[in-house]
Image (cartoon, rainbow, N blue to C red):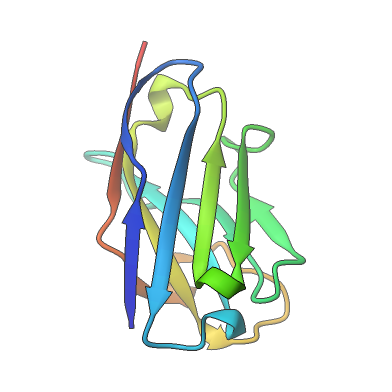
Length: 126
């Protein structure tokens, strides 16, 4: 299993970024996917998740209304659109694969995700 995340960068508060994550080595369409982030000195935080078929989503409280996750099974990709970025969004962002095949719903628990990408850095200046 490989997960390759990209799209991070240095932006100003209020800007927009789109993160991408391409998966390989597994049946991408059969797994929910999630985005998490980790800032220095802090625990890994749930950001967003999407069900295997793309019909269900969940978001962390701090990003609701600003971030959107969507899944393109035809491209083996999951995306995170981030609008109105804030300095507190600064972190290393990871995409992850839900270890359960065709889970009913989505999970916000780190422990439910068995495979992780390398992370892409997002830095938001004020």
